[in-house]
Length: 62
Ligand code: SF4
Ligand code: SF4
Image (spheres, rainbow, N blue to C red):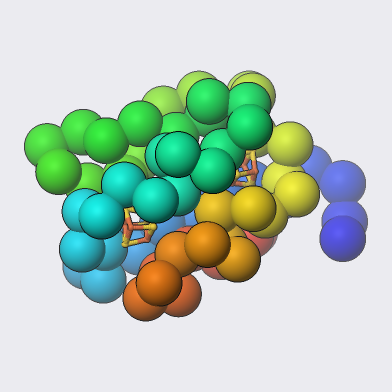
């Protein structure tokens, strides 16, 4: 995985389940108005636990 990748959430697909927030070890994600958001992009390590965990595959690393 390339350095500096960050989680990018397709909000149109997000169901608001919150799983990605639970699995994010750096707490870079939070739920905002029932959608997942990368609220602390500087804390995202790009390892992609959220990508693996999202049941609707709406998170990618870019
Ligand atoms: S890639 Fe890792 S650090 Fe970044 S938002 Fe996803 S789980 Fe959190
Ligand atoms: S795991 Fe996927 S569907 Fe669930 S809140 Fe996160 S981005 Fe949305």
